[in-house]
Image (cartoon, rainbow, N blue to C red; front, top):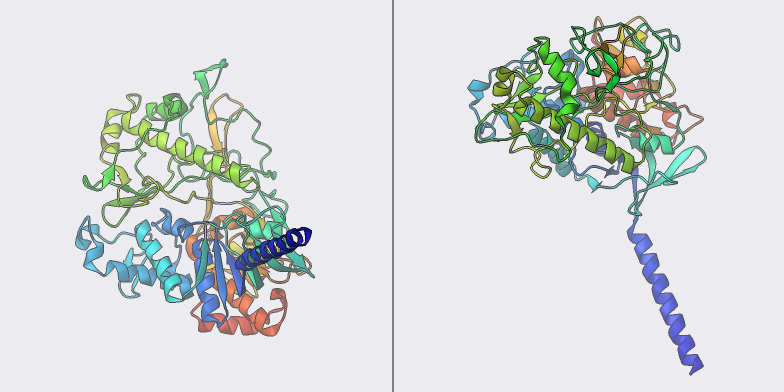
Length: 551
């Protein structure tokens, strides 16, 4: 009898062992290049890996592909369009192809849309590009890319940030996600907005603003007293519950801390928001929802702004096709949830979800307030009620964007740090892998109480380069002593204010493609990514349509 029990035990043990081994085997995946992220830069990186003849796995924490490009930012921040090439330009050409079909124009005729853009037409027929579009059309393009290139993709897979990156001899060997899947590769690309893979690989990075002296810059650091754009309080407005009475307490969304010394560094980051897609078509709009925790007192400061006679509330309802908008922050109290995101870059996934939910509730409450509260001037309320969330966008998320606008999180301190000197053209870049041209644009970072007792915003900067600038190869690779097989095309090595220009979606796609070519060449040469021969890299990038110079 004992022998029978022993036999059954042995059979059971090996059966369980075999089942465990099979389960482990089922969670093992490998490719030449592992791309982590679901952003626009992640997709273009994955496409280019295939075009470069290598295998790729796209590991996306997101379900929807495209990041901000498909998440509401349809009024593209392009700068000079001549500086946009390669797969980035191809994306906008594919957008053009969609809108060439009459069936795409569901809520208005193409002729009714007009052709207004930023400096050049939204629809550039000569170059077959379109720069302004609806979110779902952008997502279709990214899905087309993945399908056409047969890219193996795992969605809703989140890096295990507690030991989920295996390193050996200065290389990433594999990354493991929270679901237990392990992805091994010869090279890795971190194309997330947050830079989680980069951070877990112990690559150096910075969060917040460097001082103006760190890199000898004019526009970095705390910017108290600097008032750019229109996102500041034009009139003296009291920050207190009872105007002029500090003992009554401070209104919501105002810091009581000292903002810091002008030009000094801090660990604060520019504000986030959602880029909303609204519609004014009666058959394609839904009323602005009222959050469960809505409190009109949260928006009293905006009421006081309206009391001063400001009428520019609708200025950033930027029109996109089919009677919709890409609605962005505008004014001193708007969709930017100033000061509520400082811990986001380093936060746990759970904490990030809380921050995102708080931003969503704030912005939904803001919309409901402006559309319904009698404190708001009647003419603004009336016009606001002509709009609603677009019924045919983000249909699986209550018509709300699935991507918060992470304007800035971690920034790598890599082999080369791009600063305002490169952006402004006062320092030569000898090894470019792409170009940018947009203004050095930082949204507000703080809302504080001035010494005179009135409220003001701080951190909003908009400084235009004289011409398009080049982005160094060294800004997408870590220091060699830290990691030799990682490329970072989104959380690039740059100062806060330089990143304010680089952080545009066309540039992320440009750098995503260049990162993929770099990784592929490193594999071919069995070398560190930092040791890729630049002349050969340049030749390959130009052959793929990248724009590296406009001289």
